[in-house]
Length: 231
Image 1 (cartoon, one colour):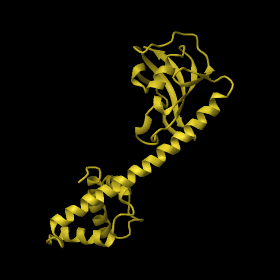
Image 2 (tube, one colour):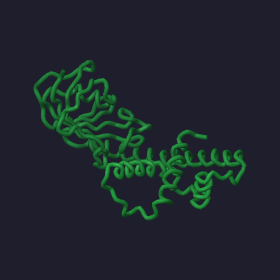
Image 3 (tube, rainbow, N blue to C red):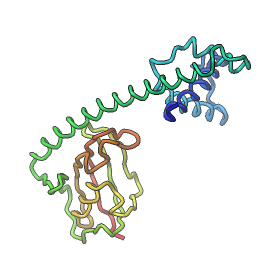
Image 4 (cartoon, rainbow, N blue to C red):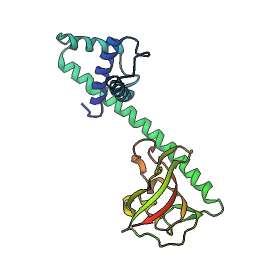
């Protein structure tokens, strides 16, 4: 069975069994540490169930949960069950892949449109690789090299304005070469004390794989960056 679906099925079993015992959970208390932790566990399991949405027959599912909890013999031959589980896993993963491909195509189209529009703005310059950069505030210090470590303040957004990351009150310290390629390249254009705006094409960011959280496949990224210190 595909490993990506195993956590989904395990989460579904635990979550549904717990809901059956608890009844209406909408008014459950969230006061003690155990209650809060239990809520967090339930949230994690619920997120895992999203991949199987629309595929689970809840009546059959609950019958399996109840038989397992009661210690009953399986109602079907284990081999037949495993065959069905394998097919279920494949179907869920194929659907997820199809949805990912649709998202990747939409992100690519939106990113290309944004890059074309942004490149036409006054003050925007484009490197040979395709990174777009704009001076918001020019500094007068040295520029970092790929071998340097830097401290920066930054905010990262998608082309629709969704913020996916920010340094907050404390500057981020990292090696210049440890960022995605487009970010690393753009940093080396900045004199110390500068504040720039970068637009990084997806192939110089996280590409078709995307990253955790809001950064989907083929996402173009927008950053405002202040170079605070070269270490």
